[in-house]
Length: 159
Image (cartoon, rainbow, N blue to C red):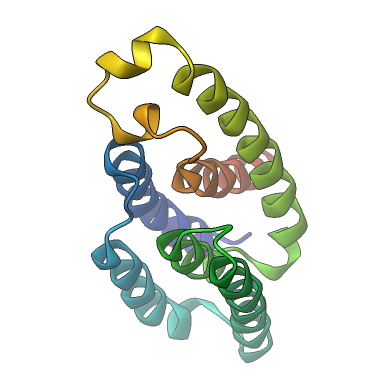
């Protein structure tokens, strides 16, 4: 990952952190966050990406959106989760997509288990956060943020 990619992903991680907090608090990802991510990508892409890399990222994001939309249609995912995942994948270099997906899977498993415990604890009723009180819902933006930050961390060590 080159320096420009890292800077763009750092900026995206700021938006992702805000999305994760919103998802934890309200189980909602504001459309404004997704729009900001797309605008950031549109501003950065012409400066940072070759045509081949641009096409690869657009393809990965489109595939993720298509799969996510199918899962949303069956009620397995939230619409905000699907949009945020596709927007995030625009910032992940194509060579780093397998690492992103691996970190995302591990983060989703960890957050699902954590939420399972928290949602069934007596403390959940005392929390103001919607994600603690709504049994069976996992704020997926947290895992998306952790995966993006993980890819950023790995790229820093590889450089």
